[in-house]
Length: 186
Ligand SMILES: [Cu+2]
Image 1 (cartoon, rainbow, N blue to C red):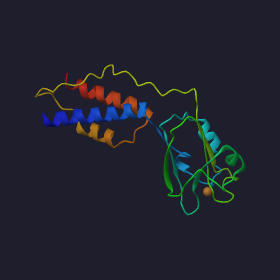
Image 2 (image 1 turned 30 degrees about the horizontal axis):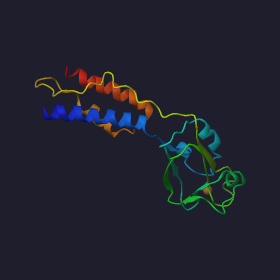
Image 3 (image 1 turned 60 degrees about the horizontal axis):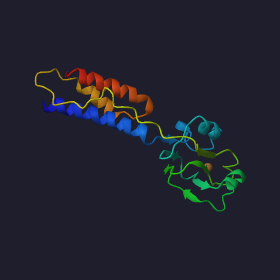
Image 4 (image 1 turned 120 degrees about the vertical axis):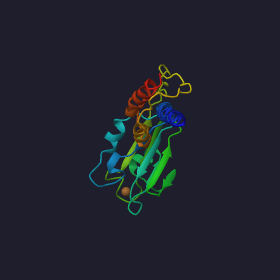
């Protein structure tokens, strides 16, 4: 019984985490696997254009801090690649910046020449965008204490799900796994 309860609790946690992420915030790694760099002529404009940013989202810049940095700047500074008076400067090589307001958020690398080479990105949170609606809890009735003697679902399911890095696309997977787990008890 303790084992079964643990599995259910894990599944619940997994679903809750997915729902929480869906309704609250997403993490966007700038440049995806390429990160924040001048190598490969990453089109950060295109990268940003294919995403819908919302207030609360986290923008992560990953880069080699020996060669790059991140500066938040005004629009004129952004357009001119003017690094003389940034609003904020980040230099850890793994900077997570929470977007707290709507509108444009301009970033570039302050190392001479890098902004001009295209290492700049405009994170635009549309002013008309509303936060994503939280999906209804239909089909997710809270499980009561499972009865003894019911075959327990395999633990590997729960563990592999728990270890996964969550994204929107995996929400469905979580729901499915949860349904499978529940069906084992009822
Ligand atoms: Cu740079």
